[in-house]
Image (cartoon, rainbow, N blue to C red; front, side):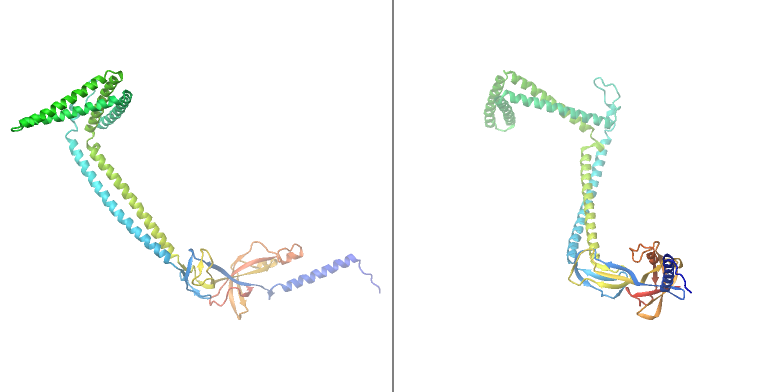
Length: 447
């Protein structure tokens, strides 16, 4: 009996169905399951910590070896500290010197405070008897307010303003006189100078002559003094005559008037100063002002000394911190994995001197197929086996499940390739006896 073969397209479809079925069951067979248990493989891992010095320097000593167990805070290595020790000695001496200067400044401030208190007390005591003197003063000119009307500080301000105004007028008078002196010529100035010198000389000789009248048997003294007095008087007359002759010019007469104005301006200024000083009593007295200035200077010196002490102590503390950092300590409990330095070598800050890890905090990351993703949950238990201990199992717990799938390989873009899509699952492994080591291949069976 002859059977007609199906058309070619039908045969192709049937073949694809058969192959797909075979592939499916083959894939299921290759999925790491035994007796319904999901299995996967990975490598034992741990967080590796790089131990680095914070300072640059020469390695003085390395205190650990590779594979050695250490505890948190245990010294691992030390750097040469001779330079920092010398710098600290200098800083310590500077701090002591700054403290000594502060003690001196503090004593000076206390002394200045005492002197100020004494000056103030004396000034207030001197002022006490005259505080109400102004009440009895009579008015003058067109002023008709009571004499007590203005307070002391107001009268002080007015007196100071009058001194300032008088000083301006005095300077103007002097400048005018100086200008006229230059205008009349050097010869007139010399005549003025000779006149004032002759007058001073005559006054001195006259005073000496007058004293001879009290001398016993002093006729010879009087005769000698009379001779000098006659000479001084003649010199004065000649100087006065020369001056009078020089006054015939307009410039000389103007200078005479300018001198008169200057002398009056000088006296007005002096009188204004006298009145100001009369009001400068009590807390406003010059003695109190001087004591206050000394006190302010002493206070500034004390504050400067305090700042110097703080700076010196800060510098000392900085060096102590740097010296403390010469020794590098273990940041945690763990095992030294690698030792990259030896004594005598020079290290830079941040360079990896040692690496270490905590073997009691091991993890393993495995990858499960996409169709098994739903069978894994956080906190799920698992067993771990390694080739080094074939007859032992270790417990593990799921601590992280990836949110996104990964492709194996990553560049798979075909529909068939998506069957290799996997999810990363991270487990925490219990390593109570420390048998498991980083890098060991391990098999994980999920419970």
